[in-house]
Structure formats: C-alpha cells, structure tokens
Length: 267
Length: 348
Image (cartoon, rainbow over the protein chains, first blue to last red):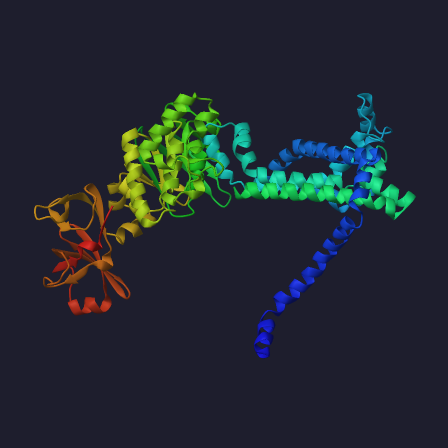
C-alpha cells in the first residue's frame, strides 16, 4: 500500500514539484491582497469613501485612465494593424520601441515627457497656446498614463490582427469591399476580442500608474498618489483604507471585464 | 472573356513568366500544374490581390490591370473556403451586396436564388464553423457568385474535401457552370479533375504555360513530363457511359466497349491503372468482366517491371513483372488477351 503511494508520487515528481513552486508564487500574490482587504472594517471603508478627497481622486483616476485608453485606441489600433500586415526594414526596431515604456522606470518616463510637454519646450508651448497644459493638470495625467500603458493595447491588438487570415480580407476585396470597408467589416470585428482585452489591460495599467504621473502632475491627485502621500504624512492607518478601496475597485472592474470577455469568446 | 497578356509575377524563389491565356465567355478553363507551381499566386494576380511585375489583364474588352480588386468584377474561391467566421451563412452570401449598398429586396432575392441553386437553404442561419467541408465550399461558391462576377477564379476547390464529397462537389461545379454559363478559371494539380471538368486545360510547369488544349489534346499528346507521366500510368479514355439492354453499365469508345461500375452517365472518361490489367496468351476464365484481344505494339524495360502497350486497337499500357514477362515468352507483334475487373475502371 505504502509502496503503491510512493510509486504514484515518484511517477509524478515533476508535476508535484512544479505545483509546489507555483503555489508559493500564487500565495505571494494572494495573501497581501486579501490581508489588505480584510484589515479595515467595512464602516471605516465607507467613511473613507465618503471623504471628498478620496472620491474625487478615485473618480479622477478612473476617467483619466479611460481617456488615455480612448486615445490609445484611436492612435494605437491603426499602428497595430499596420504592423500586423506589413513587413519592412526596421520593423523589429519599431516593435522594440513600443515596448520601451514597459521597461524604463516610470519616474524616468515622466521626466522624459516633461522634456517634451513642459512649457519650456516647443511642443509644450504649442499646446499651451491652444490652452492645454500638461504640468499640474489633467492632460498631464492622461499623457503619463498613455505613455506607460499603450504598449499593452498595441501589442494585444497587433496579435489579434495577425490572427485574422489575410485571405479573408482578400476575399472581401473581390466581393467589392474597399480597403476601409474591409477593415471595419472584417479585420476589426475579428480582432475585437484582442483589442478589448488590450484595452482592459491598458486601462488597468493606467489606473495603477504612479511614477510618471507623480513627475508631471502631483495635483490634482490620482488615487495611487493619494495612498502614498497619506502613508508619508499620516502613516499606515490612514493610507490603508484608501489602498483597500483602490484594490476592491480594480478587482471588481478587472474580474467583471474578464468574465465579460470570456463569455463573449464562448458565445 | 478574359485575356492575360505576357503576365510576369515574382514569387520570390522563382518567376511566373510570360503567361498568355485567353478564356472565352462561358468556358470552363483549367490551369493544371504540380503542387508548388505558383497556381494560387497566379489566380491572386489575376484578381488584383498580388502585385504583378509586368503584363496586362483584359476583362470583356476592358483593361483591368491597374484596377483595384473590388473594381474588377472577378470572383475568387479559395481552396479552404475562407468564409467570414463572424457572420452567418446568409450574411456571408450578402456581404458583397451590402458593401455595394444594394437594396434589401435584392439581397433577399439573391440569397434565395443562390441558396436554391446550391441547395444550402437549410444552412442560411448557421455559422461557418458548424458546417462540413462540402457545405463550406458551397457557401464559398455562392458568396463568390453573389456579385455576378465576370470571371470566377477557383483555387483547388476539391482538394480539401474527402473523396465522396469531392465527386458531389465536382458535379456541383459543372452544374453551376452550365446553368449560369459562367466563365470559370479553376486551378488544380489533379489530372482527373482537370479532364473531367475542363473545356480546355493549360498546363503550368516551372513558371510557364507549357501547353494549352482540350483534355484529349493534353492526355493524348502531352508535352510535359508532369502530364506524360500521369497519362502513361493511367490509361485514360474518353467515351460514353450507358446502360446496356441486359442491365450492365457499359463504357463505349469507338468500336470498343467494356463493363464498368458507376452511377454516372453520358460523355465521360475512364482510367485503368496499368498494374490492374492481367496479360495472358490464352483467354482467361475468371470473374473479371472485361477481356479484350490485342497486339503488343511496344515493350519497354524498366528493370524489375516491363511496360507493354497492347493495341485492341485502343492502346492499353500494362505493367508486368520481369518474371511474368519471361514466363509469358512474348514479343512485339504477338497477340495477347488483357483482362481487368469492371471495378478497376475509374469513371470521371
């Protein structure tokens, strides 16, 4: 009997080892999140949520991230389609460039943006002349989020377009569809799952951005910065409820959108 | 009518060079070539989906070389159907009309007409991924026909189908061609498919058209090894299948006839593999239904096998082993009997 169990285990050494290692990393993600969720009382969370500063920073975070995603859709999806359909010299360079915002420290990314969109620089001045400022203002939050999160959308959309058989587009053309009609009636509908998934990732990444936004715009204050300033100025007890609310919102949104996308994929 | 003049296409590893073809209105035209001969690219070039190096394409007296694919009026059916996976069968059928902004009534009328023509009415609400290969091919064909193209290009339409579906689809293509009097260019690597369907055949080999002619021209006088090897090893005959008075199915050609097994009737082709034919000096008593008397007109030595041509006066190529050949003790000019089963004859 014991021999049998031993043999059963011995035959599955690899699976068991990998399962154990995997469990460690899962717990590493799971435990801090749940501990935070349950360490504030519901009444304290509710009180915190009613604070004007908290509500407005959460609202600010959600809608600036959404606007950044909208800009990403308009400017990023065409690039994704172009990259999926064309091969050219330097394509690898372009693809690497898109990934750069993911790998540079985000405070450095913020400084880089400041160097272009600050009022002392040409582009910043040009925008200033039409009434748009990027320092200490909402547009600054949006470009900071856009910069660090748009790679997720572009890469996901590109993969989506690559999976669309090019011959579907060719057939559409022989049936009388123009290149524009072909894109909107064939390519885009078939890649929309990937584009939607990429948008969710981009939005979530925008919501969680801290470093680049801090450099460009510490006020108005987005929620991640609010958590940090409260921690610095008043200590853990004041920062905790805000952090908890932020985690709950992100989890609800993320799980909701994931299951929505999953259901659509199955349908 | 479609005319292709001096078309040259760069395929990267080789060129399709100086392609000249003239396909008459209502003609069923076959481009026959081995796998990898660039047949799909040739069709894509004609449709404007692949850039050409030089040459001209004329459709019904109008040059379309520089036109975008959507303005050419050339229909295309890919080998593996390529239906729009996000649209129902019905929406696949009306895709073209919808892009052209045609009225609803026209879409309805065309859908009904095509569905009836191809027998797919019961599939209209289905999604492409729930269809069988044969059904998908019918939908792809209907979709291409929905915009009444001047020419229909079909790329290996039968090769992704299982053998039984293939035969049905082959007849479907012939029927559609006859009912619509459509001009069709069909590319294939399958010799029998080419002979069965083509009014004329162009043989594509190593990037060039090496021969154009009726199926008979091509298999009687092949000028490419690809075709010659095929006709050598298949004993192809063109004739007529009918029912004899005693209930047998007969393939008749000139003054000769033999028994076959098939449901098809009319002007058709028969092929018999050389290794399925028995050669003997005396008539054989056996269950095989066909025994013909003939004269050996040529003997060629292929090492372990010998190829004999027996004229009955139809020319049959037969393959016998060296040992059988020695035992038979035959030579050119000798009279022999050839025997084969009715079920060994393939009718197409």
